[in-house]
Image (cartoon, helix red, strand yellow):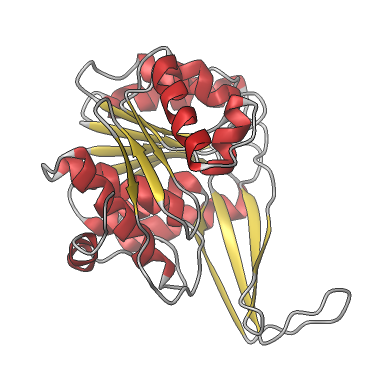
Length: 306
């Protein structure tokens, strides 16, 4: 079983415009609403890819209820800790004329000590049955920068721990040697406190994270190649040529697809190819994380590795 864990889900409103004009009245030609945020994107991706998975999240207010209802309707296994503060709502504006996407992101609301204790207790119960855990997303006020480290301490020695985070939240957990960390290029720069301008800078950044404790490092970079650093080598995984519909959740599907590939028995490089394929598949659909496992496997064979 693979568990998806995180504290900052979101209810996502997506609005499509023929042409978006700043400081003008804009009327959407299409609107969509769905669960989003890293933890829910990973959880839904794992559910659609198949195999046993469970999402462990927090949910509050109307937005939280909407997320719970959607997971239930999709038959996706999830456990939600109810929170006093409402789950955030984020909005995506898609301009068909320019092809540009604008994100309006609401920060996660604070969580209380009691809510965190309930979450940690639930996580400990679920993690005991998990072969892999994907921890992802920023941490809300009240969680503490060491929250992912605390979750890592609850995982078994044989559990593959993935962390998709940045800055102190990631650095705090590195001493526990997570199996794989997956910041994007900008988050790598933020975590290391320096710019990442060249491929050499990026490779050095990967090795620095490994020296700090990460066993493996996977760096996403939007539509550009992803980079995988293992103990043996650093690989560049070329992106697939696709017609992008909606980029939301692609990085999360990269993490979920990689964890899923490992669960299927692939080695890490082949699993990362599954991750790149999952990200590409995700970008071709309006709603995030609605992946087709057979399509992902076919696309994975097309991912070139250098």
